[in-house]
Amino acid sequence: METIIETDIVSRENEARQTALKSDYAALGEQLARRGIAIDAVLAKVEAFGVAIPSWGVGTGGTRFARFPGGGEPRDIFDKIEDCAVVQQLTRATPTVSLHIPWDKADPKRLKQAAARFGLGFDAMNSNTFSDAVDQKLSYKFGSLSHADAAVRRQAVEHNLECIEIGNTLGSKALTVWIGDGSNFPGQVNFARAFSRYLEAMADIYAALPDDWRLFTEHKMYEPAFYSTVVQDWGTNYIIAKELGPKAFCLVDLGHHAPNVNIEMIVSRLIQFGKLGGFHFNDSKYGDDDLDAGSIDPYRLFLVFNELVDAELSAGKAFHPAHMLDQSHNVTDPIESLMLSATEVQRAYAQALLVDRDALTAFQEDNDALMATQTLKAAYRTDVEPILAMARLNAGGAIDPVSAYRAAGYRAKVTAERPAVAAAGGGIV
Image 1 (cartoon, helix red, strand yellow):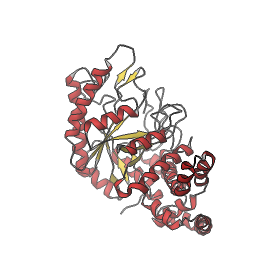
Image 2 (spheres, helix red, strand yellow):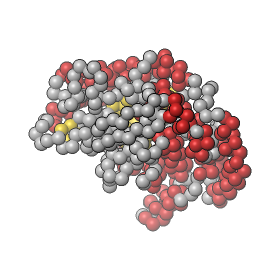
Image 3 (cartoon, helix red, strand yellow):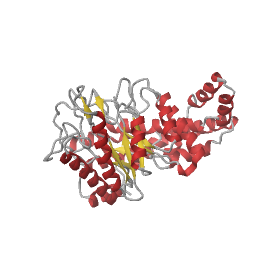
Image 4 (cartoon, one colour):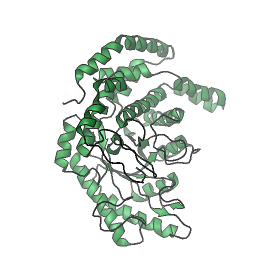
């Protein structure tokens, strides 16, 4: 298996930190042992945990006002795969890449070969009917899968079927569908008719799924439609999954909710009724900000994983939601942000594994609100960094991924090799 970053650089960086890490790991192990927790058991679960990288995440994002390109931006999907390989090499937490068609469309055989060079696989496929592609016959300006024109809906369905076909060749096992359909003015659309058209179009997509695939649908309360959105909340998303069938599930994007929404309770509801498909991890302050995971509200990320671990312990291998990052990096090096975000998702998982479930249940049943919340806080306040770093070291990654990345000078190298990308105009990325 090829590596992008020279292994000697990673080894030198690790040697400088390895003694301190072993000491910190031993100290944390003693602390956890006093709480009845075996640190090596937690380590094994963290080592087995992975989160997918979005292909678009390795490029520089933007806002609806402007976009400021960074140096060494990937020119195509093959450059993106190389950047994703760097993230995986140093973190050992991102073994798969999630493609977005048509932007990442290429010969599937070449894609498989490019990913296999670095030991990468492919996660869920993502369709795009929220913007118009080059040479696209009909426009999605007024919607796609819910459009009033049957020809536009058929075009959108065919695009999703193509995504399934490409993904099937690549070894993907899921299709994620998010649409921007909705309205910007009262009276612009009939709510019921638009939703019925959407369900009918989605049923055609669902019918084409291979037997071992899952279909993930996303809800989002607004943007680019600002008056009404066809799939606007988790309740509507649940209806869609129930209507389509057993292979249809709800995907939760942490930024697709109002600032004060209790996302962890939504996660619990979807788990309880068997319709949680997976996540797009990011963070937000105001809306769908697509900020780095854990950068604004790491406690919320922990609370989400508290629900996931609770379900994992109850259902075991039968519970396997998909995990993927979905971020827009405007002012940071995208590779550094993705590495830190993958680590933050792992951190929340590790912390959730430390929750004393028996004590929590007892406090809940006794209506002891103070001790119940303190039980969660005890796990959240635990510094699990030695576990995360040891997991990376054991798997051949970097104890400190960002330090190793900067020592390797990768960004300067690709900046010299890849032509500069001209600044783009407005448009949310």
